[in-house]
Image (tube, rainbow, N blue to C red; front, side, top):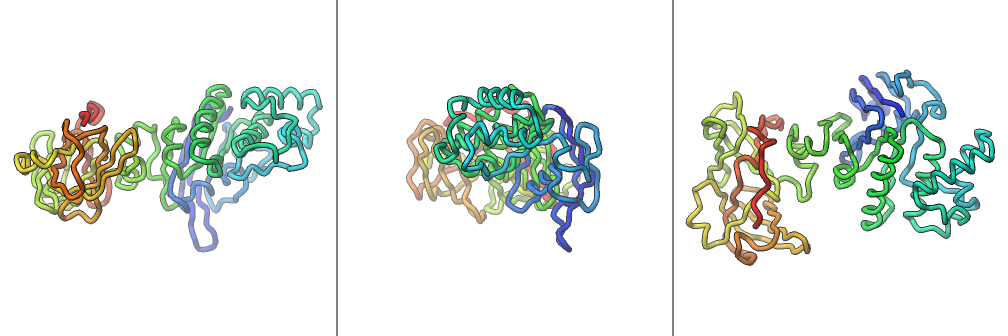
Length: 385
């Protein structure tokens, strides 16, 4: 096992900077996930750690040892790629032990390591098969086993589940989490899938444009996003954003006016923002309550947001209602657990009122940075609909 320390890492392709000064500490035995949109630099940074890319500036330590310029084979790492890259003429056992054979490891030790890795991955019964006789999930486990037998100090995963179907990805995520608990080895995992990031990562690092937007636990990033990008990237459907302006602040509550005229309260510290300052209100779909149309006239003006239902999606465990709010360019998504306020779902075109607890909302300044929340950790789950 080993820690990984990066300081001032920069990488340019010609005149195009792709890594713009990365500082990051990964603890010994930690499962860290790099997540972000395509082209944000997460895979490039993983390749830098692996020694497959040179840097223009910065320092890298693996296990406390300076590692830039060190041959990849001597860094104590093993990498699992999106492509399985198995030798088709070799059996599973031969594929898993091939690197050890090249390293002139004794045959008995190779067999022992391969057998142990196969037990961990539950593929002992597949050792004599060739890749063409395996499913996609089995091939991926063989690729992971090929890394395990090397006993690396750091595992690097570059979107290893992208070629699997949805059900198999979910199953393999569970297996990877179990694998980490059993091996207790440092793992760095790259993905663009926020579900993988939230379910696997002990620490998530959100990348954007070659920079780190925020790093922390899944809870910290979801509950206390540092800015609009992080808030909008994590969550499905993503957080709803509405343009707003500051009306005033009293005690622990800031009141904002939305483009459509509604006034709502948010438990956030507006800080030095002046009255009338342009802000962004953020509320996650699961924290919104839909009041049926018969309550809308009564509750309008009492902290709710009037709107019209544009679309209703039934997903089995939840129902998503999309509401068009006056002055908002995008529809507002609402995640329901069934009916609305004890009533049946409204029809498309029905007039409704969106309501939320001030503790379940966020404010972002003109620069996109989140304003400090008031006792955010004390929030209670949204009421069942």
